[in-house]
Image 1: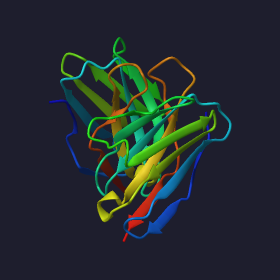
Image 2: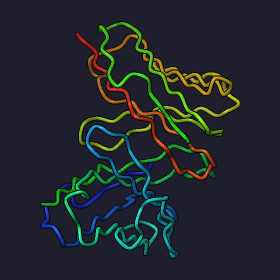
Image 3: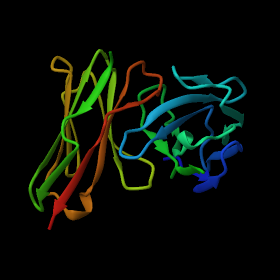
Image 4: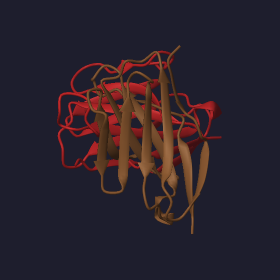
Length: 117
Length: 112
């Protein structure tokens, strides 16, 4: 299966700053990657689908201008949290789908813990 | 509204017993249902996938059932071990497009 890494593993920033999180598929080319957010003691919430070479698709209620997604290559997607506020503090996780056409397992990164002061 | 509920937020069982976790969903017609394990501070790890035309799937000590009439999946871990202690998540792929929607999770603790 795919090996997925994320960088950084944790980040602390001041309110109003922007933070970039990287998601890399180390051994698998991914035209699609997914970004999730997980608040403490809650389940994962799908934020957006990152599409290589085109615009990301955002889930309802997710501000596309606040959570900028760039998928410039088949192995890298980035999520930038712009003008971060304390309510953006969360665990951000990316995933890469398997090679099938649909319904395959997903390979998740280890997550990035964002704390906004 | 669409919901995916895992009935027990937490489940404690004795080592060696079978753990049974429940996932119920409403207002979905998923083609697939998946189960993941998540350890604290880590990303989920895939365990099993079951399709709508499959009743049961097994993998080593794990078994998943899928009842599309009841809109329910059961996840069993037989001969449970303390190392099985984790949060288990069910996830639906409503459109077959790999967009996963997760349940609320059940935190399983296996007591030695």
